[in-house]
Amino acid sequence: MPKPNDHEFFMRAALEEAGKAYGKGEVPIGAVVVHEKEIISRGHNLRETEGHPLTHAEMIAIHRASDRFESFRLEDCTLYVTLEPCVMCSGAIIMSRLPHIVFGAYDKKGGTVRSLMELLDEPRFNHRPLVTEGVMEEECSRILKDFFKDLRRKRDT
Image (cartoon, rainbow, N blue to C red; front, side):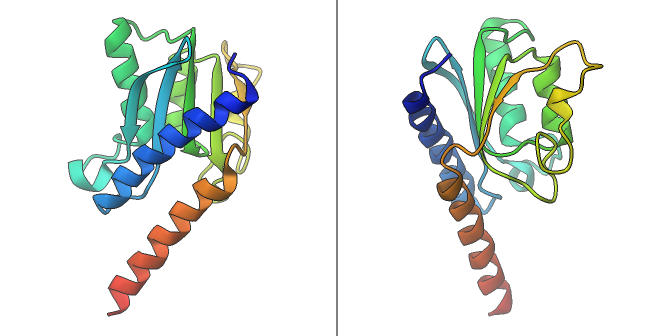
């Protein structure tokens, strides 16, 4: 497992991905998958760009990591994501057997790791990852708040 200070290093990489999404007019959420302290895949939201509901940051990063390993089993990896995952992404985390997930900001409207429910702790699933929550929460929340403030300002002008 990464050391606590490693969490900030990898969350900063996820925030860089979120910044890429922001620059494209996408909701700024970023994710990275880490294996043996190395980033093996990255992703950021592309729903608007791709016009596809499955292109969340987590889904893209998990897909790319699975391609790299030629396996859906990411049993030795950690997912870092700037926002608490939704139900779809939580399902992908379970199905990919990720042993550890680290998220930054809480999502009171759609988060299914802690906010709306604790899907990753559901005992009936055959896989339950370790969850580290609130890493760089302020920075991860700020980029989202800034994005939506900018969006409202553009809409109102």
